[in-house]
Image 1: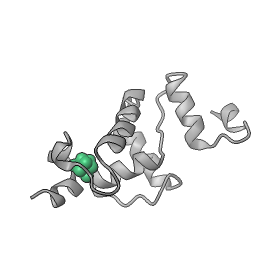
Image 2: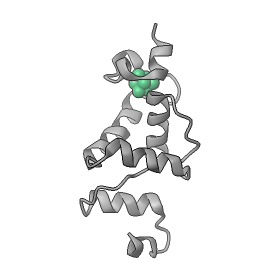
Image 3: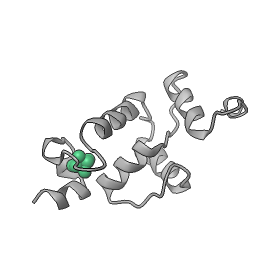
Image 4: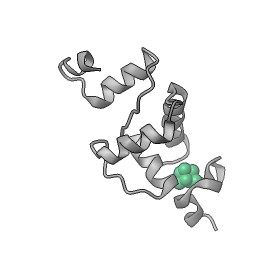
Length: 106
Ligand code: SF4
């Protein structure tokens, strides 16, 4: 991680993503998609990818399962269903668990 962070232009998100996706090291990855989905599903108020509490949350949430599939799933969820405007909650498999969605769909 330190070596990656020493590279110009690579920040914490990029380095964490490389660790997970390229090297299979299970550490949290936090970007705008992660923040968006976690805030909606769990009713949280993370301010953005620089919010340290979001990194701690994802470390706990993923636990030992910080698998790349988790992050690919989050990216796909936000791209296909959890749109920033007009989320497609009625088609979403997370509706039953999602605080934001349950407020929208009565
Ligand atoms: S239920 Fe709606 S708000 Fe919740 S994750 Fe799914 S699309 Fe997003």
